Amino acid sequence: MKQTCYAIHAGAAALLAWLSARLGILLPVIAILAVVMVIDYITGILASKQEALEHPDNPAYGWSSKRGKQGIIKKVGYLCVIAAAMVVDYIILHVAAQTGIQVSLKAFFGLLVAVWYILNELLSIIENAGRMGANVPTWLSKYVAVLKNKIDSQGEGE
Image (cartoon, rainbow, N blue to C red; front, side, top):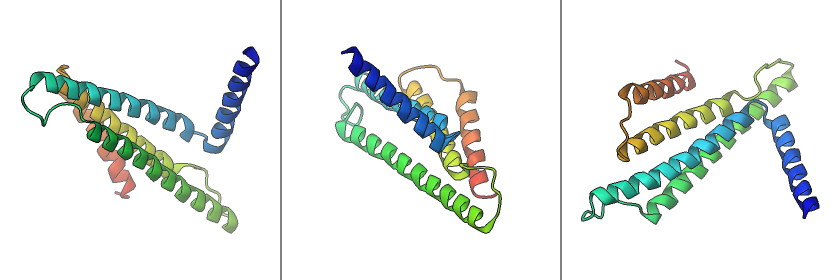
């Protein structure tokens, strides 16, 4: 049993080391994104359950497995977009290397998209907390929205 645990730990450590070498700075950002995605999903379920308690006669409120599946599909879509942005980064680096151009950043678009999605998830978590009845400071929602908009404008080259 201990040998199996050691093998699992060694395999996980090797996988993390390989991912870290391949993704560099993008690895912790993707890990943060994964955590906030899970938190957003859980808070969304809890907020829906709270709304169902507050509006027991209205079927528009409450948790639905269909909406839950849609949320998971949307989050998988996020990961696909990040993967596409990482491919763009790879192509730029590859073409730059072939033409002798030195590029210092290895993950610009992937990083930009991942951080944008983190901010999107944080806004959703804040909204879910408000739906659960938490007193959310207005400035917090506005600040996260401003950061998200700044990334939007950077991505558009403004």
